[in-house]
Structures are given as C-alpha cells and as structure tokens.
Length: 561
Image 1 (tube, rainbow, N blue to C red):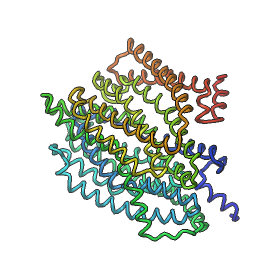
Image 2 (cartoon, rainbow, N blue to C red):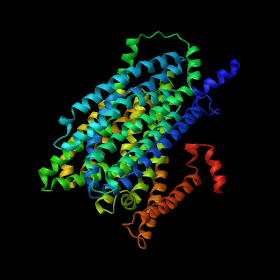
Image 3 (cartoon, rainbow, N blue to C red):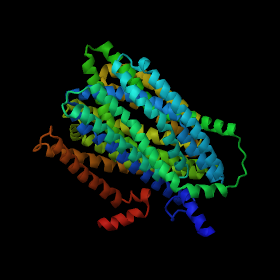
C-alpha cells in the first residue's frame, strides 16, 4: 500500500465512512450529526424494541407471578442503574468529548493515551462499585429480601460494562458511531437470549417455578449481554488498529500532558457526566423510595396492590416509553463530540447552528413518536402485558412525559458538549428539588400518575433553565425553531388522530384482549399514521430542513409534488 492510500484509509476513521464529508462548516457538521444520529438511533431503537419484545413470552411464562416479577425486576434494576452509572463514572462521555477535542487539534496520540488511562479508571470503578453493590445489597433492599438476590446477580454486570462503555466513548470521539450501535444491538441480543432461555426452563415449562430465581437469572443476563457487546468492540478495535496507529504516528505532538493531568482531566469532565447521565435514574429512585411510603400514608392499599401499581408505571409503561426516549439518547450521544470540536475552534456561530439543528431533529423525530405511542397505548400495553385500562392510561400519559425527558437528554448533552457541565448539574439539582416538592401532593392526589407528573414538572424546570442559558450565551434561532415545531405539532397531531381512529375503529370488530389482534391494530395504525406524517413533511418541504437533498429524492420516489 502506498503512502497516500494509507493516509486515505487512515483518515476514514476520523472523518467517518462517508467520503462526501468535508470540513467546511455547516454542511459537514450537519452530515456528521445526521449520520451519527442514524447509526445511534438504529442501534438504540433496535435494542429497545428487542428489549421490549422479550416481555411478551417472559410475562406469559411467569404467569400469575408476572406483576410481582416486574416489580422486583424494577426495584433491582433502578438500584443497579445508579451503581452502574457510578461505575461508568461519566468516563465514556468525558473520553468522547476530550478525544474529539484532541483530534480537532491533531493530537491523536494524546487522545489514545487518554483512552488507555481511562481504561484503568473504568476497571477500578467497576470493581469497587460491583463490590459495594454485592456486599451492600442487604442495606439497599428497602424491606424486600428478594431484592438482595437480584442485586447479587446484577453486580457482575457492573464489572464489565464500564470498560465496554468507555470503548464506545472512544470510538464516538472519532465520530464513529457504527461500533457503538452494533455492539449495543449484540449486547441486547445476547441478554435477551439468555433471559428467555432461563425464564423458559425455570418458569415456562410449568409456570410454577421459583419466580425469584427466575428474575435473578433475567437480571444476570445483563452480564452475558455485556460480554457480547465487549467482544464486538474488540473486533472493531482490531479492525481499526492500523488506522489508529497511523493517526498516532502523525500527530502534531506539540502538547505535553502528564499522566496525573490526564487523570485530573478525565475526572473533572466525568463527574458532571455521572450526575447528568443518571438524572432520569435518580428521579426513578426517588419514586422507588417514596411511592410506597406516600401511598401507605394516604391509603389502605395492600403491599401486593401497591407493587402492581408500581410495576405498571415504573416498569411496564416505562419499558415501552424508553423506546421513544432512545431516539433522543441517540441524538445526544452524537452531538457531544461535534459541539466539542466547534467549542475547541471557538466557532460560536457553528455552535448556535448545531444547537438549533439538534432541537429541530429532536422535534422531527420525538414529537410524532411520542404522540404515536400515546395513540396505540391500548393495543401496545395489551400486546406486551395484558388488557388494562389503568396500564393504558398510564402509558398514554407517560408518552407525553417522554417528550420532556427526551428534550432534557438532548439539551443536557449540548451543555456538556460546550463545556457547561457544572451549570448543567446545578440546573438538574434545581429540578430535583422541584421533584421533591411536588412528589407528595401529586402522588397523594393521583397515585401512580402523580409520580409522572412530578417528574415532568421537575424536568420542565431544568429544560427551561438550560434553554434560557444557551440562548443567552450563543443565541438560538427561535423564529426558525418555533415555525418548524409549530408545523411538526400540526402534522404529529394529525398522525395521532388517524392512529386513534384506526385503533378505535378496528377494536369495534376485533378483540381488545387478543395479543395477535392487538399487533394487527398497531401495524395498521402505525402504517396509516406514519404515511400521513411522511407525506406532509415531504409535501411541505419540512423534511428538507433535516435531511436536505435526500428529501427531494424521497419525493420523486413516492411521486409527491
């Protein structure tokens, strides 16, 4: 291979796999954001869908124990999620941001050295947090001895996932989202296969097995999935090894940074990422540790009834809504390294454009997805769980709350990308205080829905504070944003109405309790509602704002003038 070919091959890691990219500002950054978002959205959506589909046979096999199993699963997972975020320690996002920063100034070797030092940190935090979770389980069970067993099973995943997440962050720093997306999917696939296999052999054959042991094995599946995801990343690392070596050898090498400084840099960047990355989980933990106490104080419901109520809003509905929120998460991951580059260059106009584009992309995808989920709430809940008026109502309301949570996910990542980590944490703390203030009255008045209301209010306050700050510092094109979102809401509401009419119309002749018929109802509603939305965003040229010239190609293909 000649030197020029080697250089071209090596640059593709940093510049991405699409040769059409350039470094000329708006179009280049927008192309990077769109491709990165496409990769991460695909990986995240497929993983979330897979993570939701397994529920159907899982619930059937657990039979009469399914609601109790869901409640136990959720209690364990909420605690595990917090420890996992602590173990990851915000290091992957920090690495992504800093690697992107060093790459922008041609210090590739320094970015790779940063990754290696980060590996040592992630292994250390993984071991410490896994040990605390395992041996501290008796103190975290909050009166439910079964949680102890589940936490022991989950501790193993905390050992492996930090290293996997860190490596994803490293690739994202090069704006290579493919490795993250593929490993995320394989991680979920391996996890689901193990979950369903163990659930079948423990519960599926008789429906009368040890359901607590079944749940513990379902949670241990997180460790199996992590091994699968780590294997995929290892394969990608081998694939890119020569390219990384070339970039390292041809770095500017003008910066001299000591190992201790690198560690300080990682930690300084990582701590705010821990808090912001665990924001939704922290709110869920507030629900977990206050919901039962508040309901016991204001009602005479039994523990079994409260467990069922908790399972409906904290696990059942949340599991489906997270499919929608994953759209925002994918966009958030993509925006951090791009904004970090612009910040490094001191390009305030580019930051303003990127923030505006991120908000428009969020609205374009998230609003119709959330309203669509609300429209098919009844058949969706029936398909994954069982026919339930309460479950349907909570899923509908949670779908609207998802827009607020999704917006927080995107704009908090923007704050991190532009280096406003500490301020983002301060704003989140304000939102958490608001959550605490509203938690008791909302839960007392509206029970399960009350937890969602207090969460929505808390994050709405945070979102307002963040957007206000970004606008003051960089200026947002609010005229463009308001016009765009106004049209999106109009078309999304039309999609919602069509999906509702289709759902209610088909249920006149179909059995609402049938899972198979519910699937058919969802398919019809999604196809017709989605066709309506696609037609009008193409017809109105709204899609051109997001995908550019590709929209014209879609119009020609679909014969839309």
